[in-house]
Image 1 (cartoon, rainbow, N blue to C red):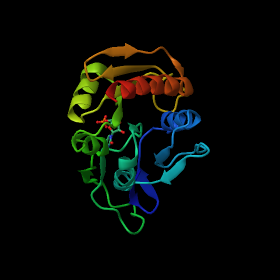
Image 2 (image 1 turned 60 degrees about the vertical axis):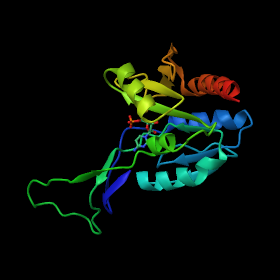
Image 3 (image 1 turned 180 degrees about the vertical axis):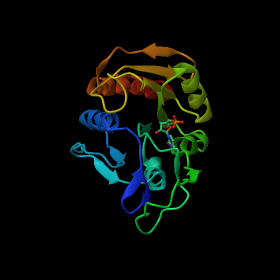
Length: 205
Ligand code: C5P
């Protein structure tokens, strides 16, 4: 989230459920896990290193500090693309008529990881929350952010994406291969994704 003043903030509808499910599933499989999380109401999984952040810049710092020690980075967080240019020190008072909010772009954490990874064998996984042209948009993100695979969410569906306990995702690979998974609990989506990531990793070693 991005604060406007001490009592207001900009955020989005992400619940964090998909990221937490992935962290829990990876831990259960024996991985060492760091979960970098924005504000959420969820209970963190046991035995993972929890790194709580608020803003995109804080998330960026945390991810960059941790990323080198990991074989797999999964970026499930719905990072806000913009933040207010200024954060007021005190509560902004009403009664000043129409207000214009000036926004600046946030850093793209995943693109920064992807574009600086060189020959590192680390597997980089992104998510794409889309409401239209799902595959074309995801394909562009996969390329631009230099990812190994991208998980495509149709967030206009009620039973999938933001806030839901279930998700119906499509998995798009670097070679253009597309795999469609049926609607299932996010815990199961996490298991399916980790299976795919494991085989990618085995192939790249
Ligand atoms: O471009 P878009 O925001 O849709 O891309 C989604 C993917 O990029 C997600 O994996 C998300 O975690 C990551 N992202 C990021 N930093 C941003 C915006 C998105 O790491 N500022």
